[in-house]
Length: 149
Image 1 (spheres, rainbow, N blue to C red):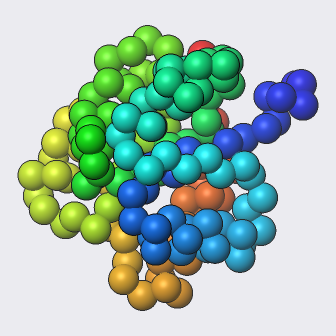
Image 2 (image 1 turned 180 degrees about the horizontal axis):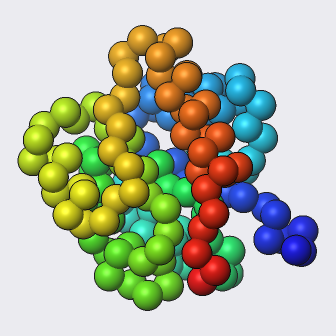
């Protein structure tokens, strides 16, 4: 395996600066040293994933290992991001974990209908949030075997 193939990126799609900081802090606290790319809205997330806009020079072959996707985003919401990811053959198998404050049944059902791999309500307590992030990192970056696409 090449060094580039071992480089596992986390795409964190989060518009709330406090939640962004908490997620990054939790990942670092648990020694998950992977590169974290942050997209602050749905447009920026799609630009990163499809190498458009400010990411036009990025190589689409270098996909993130996991996308942590908030639902309540400006410009394009998380459900639309998920729909576009799943309908494109280049990204349809990309692991997407919905990480949101929404516990609405409609959001949960829509997320799974659109093909999310997991749906997690953000715990309010930092210790619980930190533990949830640790488990996400351990599973999606170390244990999960992605498809060879």
